[in-house]
Amino acid sequence: MLIGVLHLLPTDDPHLLDHAVRNARRLEEAGVDAIIVENFYDAPFKPRADFRTAVAVAVAARDVVKTVSVPVGVNLLRNACRAAAVISQYVGGRFIRCNAYTDIVLSESGLLKPQAPYLRGVKVLADVHVKHGLTLYPPTLAEAVETATTRANPAAIVVTGGKTGEPPDPVEVATARAYTHLPVLVGSGICFNTLTLLKIADGAIVGTCLKEGREVDLEKARRLVREAKSVLNPKRPLLL
Image (cartoon, rainbow, N blue to C red; front, side, top):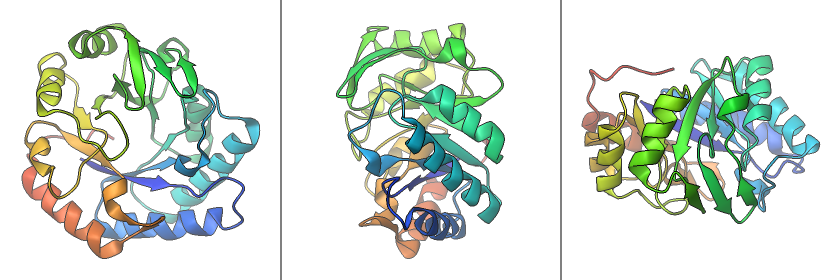
C-alpha cells in the first residue's frame, strides 16, 4: 500500500483549498492507494493544534474527500490525534496518523503524550519512535512496537527515520516486522533510491519525494508509484 501525503499550505494561506484539491487529484492520478492530509507547512507545531488550524484542515480534508475516490486520512500535527479523529469522522475520512500513540516523546513542540487511551472507532496508523523526537518510553523500538500492538488497537505500525525525508534503518523496519502481526509502513524517506525497504515493509507513506517545491509533480509521482509497486509484494492486503 502506498499512501500519498498531501502537504497543505499554511492554514492562513488564501490558496489553501485550491492547492489541496489540485494536488489531491494529482496524487490519485499518479496511482496512490490512499491520501493523507497533513498541515505540514504550519511549523512550528503545537502539541495540540489550535482551533483555527483544526477548522482549516477539516475544510481541506472535506474538499479532498469530495474530489478523489481513494481513502483519505488526516494527520493533524503535531499530535492532535483526537481532533484528527473527529475531523476524519465528520468529513468522510477513513483513518488518521498519530505521532505519539503509545509512546512518550520529547520533541521541539514539547512533550507529546500517548493518545491511544482517547481514540475509539477510527483506524490509526501509529508511529513508533517517531521522527523529530526522542522517545522516552518505551525505550527500544522493539518494545515500542510490541506495546502499540498488544496494549492498543492500531491499524498499522509506522516506522520513520530521524527526520522528514530520512529513511529508517532497514534493521528497524525488520525489527518492527518481527514484533507485530500488524502491517508495517515506512513513514519517511521513501524515494527512488530507498525502494528496497518495501521488500521488508507492507507499504509506505510518501510525501517529500513526490513534490517539486510545494506542488506534487505528477510525472515524478507516477514513476515513484510504478517503481514502488513493482517492489511491494502484491499479495499483501490493502489495510484501508
